[in-house]
Length: 339
Ligand SMILES: Cc1ncc(COP(=O)(O)O)c(C=O)c1O
Image (cartoon, rainbow, N blue to C red; front, side, top):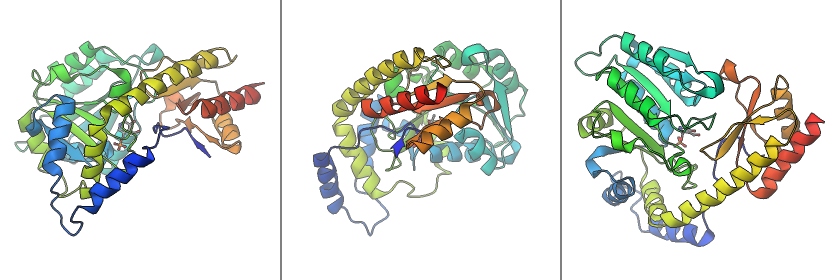
């Protein structure tokens, strides 16, 4: 099966790197909760992210950070505001925390409706003294599943609405976009930037997500995290990967080249409209047969995503960038099904 539905990196770690990681893991006391590598991992990640170590927190994947932030800041009395469409994890994790969700439909070609978002953020109740019951807006930049990179000024406008409303900028695809909201962190105490090692660093199966922001905010959220949520072996793998960041960033460039090749070919297929992407996936508009097309490809051993959670995407499919052979299989499958 060709797995092009979860925006994973098509490159697994080289065998030699895996062996070195296993050796590093062999040296670890697995019977202990505390990891001797935690501080080193924080230091490596802080260097990579150009922030102070005190400004960083981790999660068992960015997914866990989403859950932690929602329960720390919102809970059942707060609200989560999400542009529609965006990452499906936000509404589902918010609902698990019993936090009300408000979707704000995006504009033509998926530009965020910042006026509407601003208005919704302004309307929310004030959080209590512990900071719970707050309004939180998730801004995925670049956005999953559209690939759209909206202006940094949009983030600023939302941070400005009110200091007690939290703005979480999800930069899961940061390395593919080469653009970040990092420079806003010093100015906005209500801004949290979230990233993951699942995409550019090929570590989806290891579950290493992290977030950074001003120290008081990070400290307050980090206090509510389950203890020892990131395992000792994960730290070892994270350190080894960060030491070899050039290897991964070169592969990011390769994936971007393959993305543009796939984009050019998709644009030539009648009935398909691909959207420009700053990520490792491409969204295509295919019309009402979207789900059928997804099933046709699945029958041929190619898994792509019909993104039905958001009503606005019923006629769309999302394709993660694979190897050239995998991308060709997608193209072939689509051409045949659309004939
Ligand atoms: C925008 C976005 N945020 C967060 C995640 C979750 O990442 P992780 O694997 O670190 O849990 C994903 C995964 O696809 C994603 O696309």
